[in-house]
Structures are given as structure tokens and as C-alpha cells.
Image 1: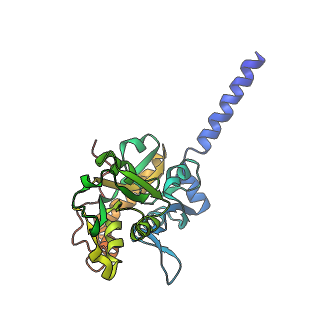
Image 2: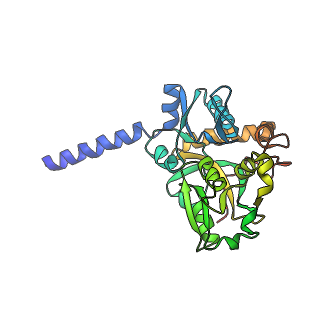
Image 3: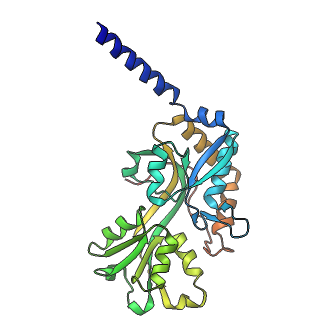
Length: 275
């Protein structure tokens, strides 16, 4: 009888604890701040402005809109690519806005907002390598960022490629310039921006035309936090409906930026992805 009573108390205690922490949105409203995990090294999505030393970018603007919708202030926490999902699962951040690809494998770990960006992944090589097709990277050393989808995607496209990873995209791209590999793989928007910064050295490199994959990026949300996801999605939909989403995109990726996108070929209106 005593054992049964103790067991009942344990179940009740943990049940109440679960209920107490089931509504993350209420916790965010109570503390008055939305803690968002960002890379801070992924220009123009999230990066440190050299003049203000503040983290700014496309995903920061989206995070600020979400915080405004909730009625709290935004607090940005810089995290590593490989730590994005663990930081969210462990409750160190409320959301992750850090170039996070929404795929079926990750849906088992976390929830996702509406798609916030759609991009292809490409490879850039040194012209002196003579490589003109992705398949020619077979047996060659390719550089990319650690913990993202870039590595599995290049391995899938070129099964016997040699991949070397780095903590940041800047480190990986610099390694390409230093001759530590013949190619570098990243999301198209980030890759084109790095390419643009080469200046007069651009002639020494070639961006391969073939896409390794098409990536739907989204904001990461802790699994089961339906209230928070509803508010996040509502904030994004409002940006789309008002036309603000278009303005934010062109502010960071448009014709007058290093990314040079002429059009925006996606909308903030769905959290569905291809199977």
C-alpha cells in the first residue's frame, strides 16, 4: 500500500511539473524576453555589424517581429551550427533562427515554423582545378561547415568525395583560398556573398551551376510547444500579408546587396516540405 502511494505521488509530482513547463509561451511572456539562438557568422542572415558590433541580419529582423508579436524584447544568443538543436532541446534558447534546414529527420527532434527561406546548395571551386561539374569532385577534398546539411548533401551527390569541416563558413571558405581543398560547399545565398567579397580574385574561382539540394529553412521550436509555434507562425504570416516580408528579404538579399537576388521565389505561408 505504501509503495503504491509513493508511486502515485511520484506520478502526480512529475505530471504537475510537466504541466508547469508545458506552455513555453507563458514562460516567455512572464520573463519578458524571447531568447533566440543565432549563428552571428552567417552574413546576411545573422552577422556582427562591424560598426555597431551588434548582431543583425535577415533572421534577426524576423526574430524581432516575433518578439514584438509576443510583446517581449529580443535577446540574441550566439550558438554554433552543431549546437542548434541541442541548445533548443535543453531550453537554453526559446527559438533557433540560425540557417536551420527543415527536413523530415529533424522533425523527430524539434518543430519548425513556416518556411522562412528557400535556397539551393552549391559548390565553388578554384578555376585552376579544371572542375566544371559536381561529379568531378569525386576523390577530391571539399570544405564546408560542420553540423549542417552541407556535408551529407555533398556526400550524397558525390559518394567518394573527401569532406573537411570547419566551425564557421568563414573558416571553410578561407581554407579554400589557402588551397586546403579544391571546393567549398554552402547554401547558395551565403556562397554567392562570399564569392562577391573576393573582389578582383573572383576570376580565379567558378561557382558550379548544379544544385546539390534545395533547402527549406525555418525557425526551430521546441517539440510540442504548440502555443509558441502558433504565435511564431502568426507573426510570419502577418509579415507576408503586409508586404514587410518582401521588404526584409530585399533589404538583405536584393539587387543592391552582395547576394544580388532579383526576385523572391518563396512566401512565408507554409510549414510543409517535400517528402
